[in-house]
Image (tube, rainbow, N blue to C red; front, side, top):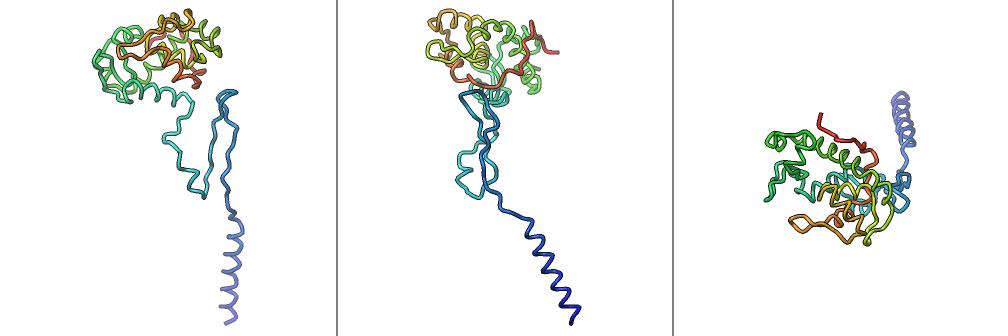
Length: 211
């Protein structure tokens, strides 16, 4: 009887000891990650309050580069690798045949069926355009042109839409020459919609090519 009492007492003591090691974890918001001086990325940690999860979006792309490229892809093709539009532009990021040739891709069918190649091509074109627009990025970044705050990511997105020349014309004319594509989307729209994303990691490379 005494041994049985000692056994149950030991069990109770062990359970009490283990339970003391668990503490409630309160939700908190940290401000350690910043995009720029005007915008913060807030990270919500686990919470018992269901309302903290109502507005969460998956995937968590934010203003990082992955968010940038996926936002452009959604605008261009709804993110579909095999999309061909009515003008013959190809893939997730809607490349023209001549643009593909300029970065070293000559097999459009193979390109259309190769998601990994499409992702590489997007980055290579950004590198090429960043080199060609490097002086414009340095001079105009942070300035306001025709009501739009100019950023590097916005400039590169606009170049993807209408080419390097159309971006230069828009900026040189103080916004008066805003080229539109065949569907009516202007470089000004891309400058505004895709501004403020993380693109500093893109290297500016003269005549960048797919390796």
